[in-house]
Length: 606
Image (cartoon, rainbow, N blue to C red; front, side):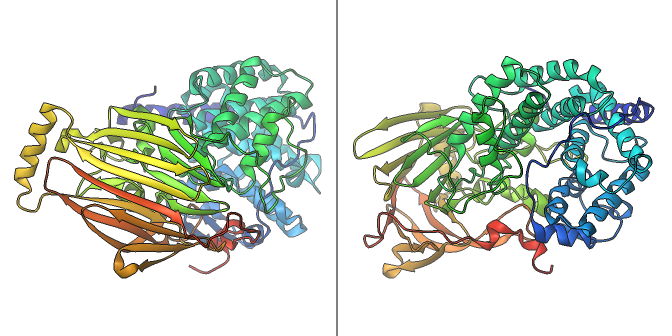
């Protein structure tokens, strides 16, 4: 596990990156392509049109400039997305001369300004990402140009290969290191004059697979979207090796299979990923293509650009509760429930970790119902911090406290504070009966502060029509009871206040019913779900937010909240979330949401 680096270590790493980048600028250039690569993923046509006109909406910020390289970047996230060249996917989707010329001009601008080893883009992970995108869109970047005009691109690609060969190990463990190594390997496979790098890059990828992904197909960050991006990179490497008529290392094949198995568990029934620990639901169709490529022994994913059918087409995960990367899953009757059932990430990965222990998400058919607020880093430091707190997750929280707390380390380079003092003991027991599947979970995140253990029981009926829950706060040991009594005295006479939160997706329409004792939630598919509870406290419907990367601002949503105060030595709330009796077993839901097809910032003004 990689530790959080000190300020001096961060400075030394940046200095070493700059030195290696400038040294790599004198490396032997590539002479061209040994094989013609092709785009792996399709972007959005409308976004590509906006980019071609000089409108860049990245990481929650928008700038309008024909040359974005001369503009002061609004955030670190904007720098990463701009210098990572992922936006080439969108320009490639346009397929018109205007977009091709814009892509070439923007790439030439980067090479002129930063190609000699200058600027913020020379980090191993970011450099590998950029090199991979240049390889994907090589045809667009070189079309209509002679050898002399393309010489600068091939020269800087050679510089990238030399830089990554020296600095891949300096990339943080996880996605960044895989981006560095896979960019290096793919360039070595497709660029003329880079053949000597193939075997060292293959060995480096094997090292990454062994050290960065455990036997269960998990990564330290426990970020499902990050794991999905790693699978994308592994599948692309397998395909590139197959195209070069080279056999993939056994460790690459084994790791790809393990990661794919984990991701099938971490997907909801609509194909979207569970939103935990800094990850979003993922780009539409991207994971499906990667899983298809992982299932192909040659690493192929059908050839050409990914296409995604409106009805999905994903392989159905195994029925009943399954576990992967510290998450537990319930799945019956076209309903999926995914729960964070492990302690938060530690070490270097704690910088992006969320205080989400025992939080869950629920999706019915193609419609998310219960969600977590999600990653807020693209909306600034305050939203990032708020999105990581327990209040932003669908679980129990004690007023004024998260189940894990933030460290006090100073922010450097825009990095977030690490999560500390989280649950040390998280337990999970499951049972499968004919009528339902049940998870019994607990965590001790509130023991140091209040002496209380949170116990949660979730029971999904076999037809998927009802999720029944039970949440308890209880001191389990004599030392815990002493701490609890002390806190009880401090909070007298009102008791220790706590709340149960169920954040709703923005497209779920909720209203209080039955004189405020129930909440009805209507999904756009026509399904109606009804929430009820039994126990101390009051039920309310309050404002919430849905933090969706790529949007100009957080989306407004609602949350179901049960507020109560703990007067005795234990407190228990039982609740149910069930489909209304007149909701049919199967609903034909083939409509497409605009939000899934095109990110909001590019179809509306700020």
